[in-house]
Image (tube, rainbow over all chains, first blue to last red; front, side, top):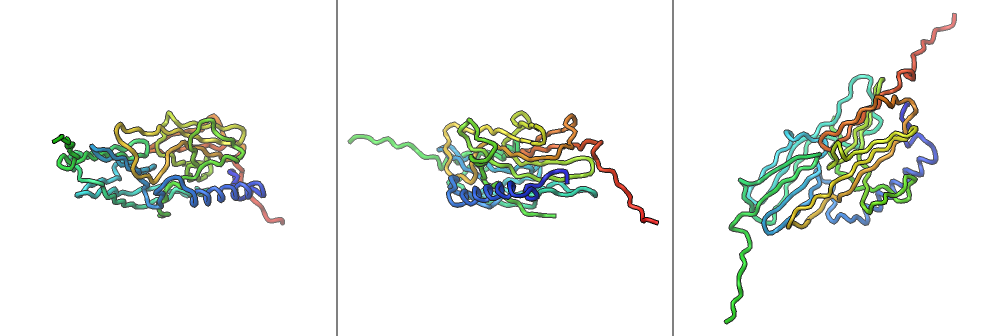
Length: 146
Length: 136
C-alpha cells in the first residue's frame, strides 16, 4: 500500500495511537468547551441586547443543501451532507468524516424578527443573524428622585 | 453508504508530539480526514471549517505531508459568546506517504471548508502487473 497506515507501522505508531487516545480521553474528561456535544452540527451562540448570532460548523455541505427556518423562538437547521463516492478500483484508506442528514433545533433566548433573519454560508461555517423583536428589546427606565 | 455525521472531536495536536508546538498561543486541532486511493492517485479530504484557499498551507517534505490551516476567529461587535459547542483554533495534521508521489502535479483546492488534495502517483512507480504462468 502506498500510504503507510499508522496502524501498520509497528511499535512507534502504536505509541502514537496511544498518545492520540490519551488526548481524546483527556479532552472528554476536561473539555474546555462547556457544551461540547456529539450532535451535528455543533453550534456557538452569541447574544447581545439587539439579537442573536448562531454559528454552525458544516464543512463539506453545499449551501443549497442547508435549510434554515425560524418558528416563534425556535431556530431549525436541517440538511444533508454527501461525501465522495468511490469508483471502481478506488479504495478507502480512512473514513473519518461521515455523511447523512442532520436536524438541529435551537431554543432562542427571545423572540426575533423572523422577516429579518440573515443566513450566510462561507468556508463551511453557517452564520445566522437574528435581530431581536422590537417589542422584546429591554427598555431603559430612568429612576427619578422623589 | 451513510456513515453518520460526526462532530469534530475538538481534538488538539499534542504538545508532546514530535511535530512540536506552535509559537502562537492558540488551539490547534486535528482535522478529520477521508483518504482514498485509485490506481493513479491518492486523494485526501480534510475537514477544516473556517479555512479558505488563502489560509491553508501544504508542505511535502520527503515523504511527510503536512497540512495546516488557520482560522480567523470571529468577533461580533457588542455580542458575547453565550453558549459554545465548539472551540476555535487552527488545524494541523501530518501524514507519512510513500515516496511515489509526483510532487509537480499535486493539486489542492478548498471548498466549503474542506481541503481536497490530489496526489498523483509517479507514473514510473505504478507497479506493472506480472502474469504468472504455470510451469510446463
